[in-house]
Length: 190
Image 1 (cartoon, helix red, strand yellow):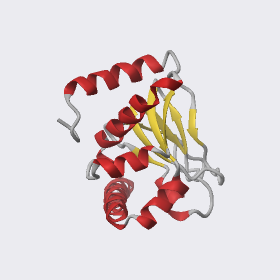
Image 2 (tube, one colour; image 1 turned 180 degrees about the vertical axis):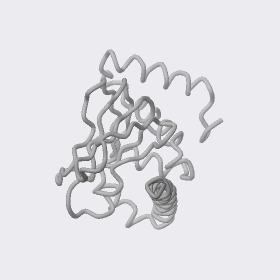
Image 3 (cartoon, one colour; image 1 turned 135 degrees about the vertical axis):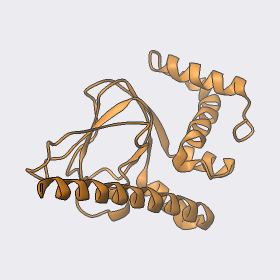
């Protein structure tokens, strides 16, 4: 049981999400859709520490997107978007043209990472650091970054938990980058 939801609701959510990829959600079904969004947000590792009322609040400025291979989720150098994305399923590629020494392509799946776009959200200066494009059918939750920041500024407990989670994610990414750099330097000296 997750956040008071039973397995039947989880199955219903999954089936409804699957069917909505083919058919739009009717407007009369918005309360069920809101419950499904809360359930999906609570299943992400990024937001799993939050209580159901906080998840309900965040769901009001979150959008579920079902995308196809080749669709671009966010573009490098984009200065207009401030959204954070939670990868629910599928594979994406992260592309960057900032350096001539990289191949410009890193493939990630939801097993590798489930959040991206957080750097632009935190900095609010400059553009996106990479392009994220779908390699397969992808399901992602887009969280409006401005509304999230406003919410966290007024809800200290949720703000602390989310910022701690982002700090852990960034620390792990730095550690992984450090390991890769050491391997590259070690191999280049041989």
